[in-house]
Image (cartoon, rainbow, N blue to C red; front, side, top):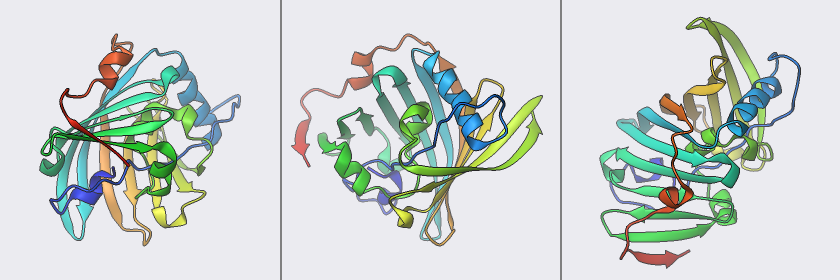
Length: 228
């Protein structure tokens, strides 16, 4: 399910956006691979991660607010996304793992189940928000470059550009990473023509909150399950 597919009001069944970042260890933090290695190490040292994505979506010249809570256990590759905004997504939940993407539609009380292979083939823009909490999964799909380095908040801020390897029509993603905790702080997504479509800040970043895998996978009982 790609959140931007539903801005018109009617919910679509397309899966989350997929993307990737390469991970190779280096001594410092002077290349994209250096930065992503540091992020990967931070994630490996954390049992669980949680963060909030807030900002704007722009589709067809119309903008909408976006507000999503993301929780993940990187070692298990289980990610949960809970939507508050836009209104068309409010109350919806996505749970993904190594095998499938389960999407709960609150308005229809329905859960759609999609294999990760189909999810990748149907990807929309360039970045799956859930992958911000699972950097080790991103290496096979994206070419990543370091666009700039700046000083911010008493540390360094690295701006990365990610271009999909297998889906050139998916557009490009920009991700900012701070060396104060080696975590993402901002995400932008651009359409195939270079138009800005998503601009989100990453906040409330926490590690080791004690969330369990069962809690991440939990979806409302009684919902109708549809295999796709």
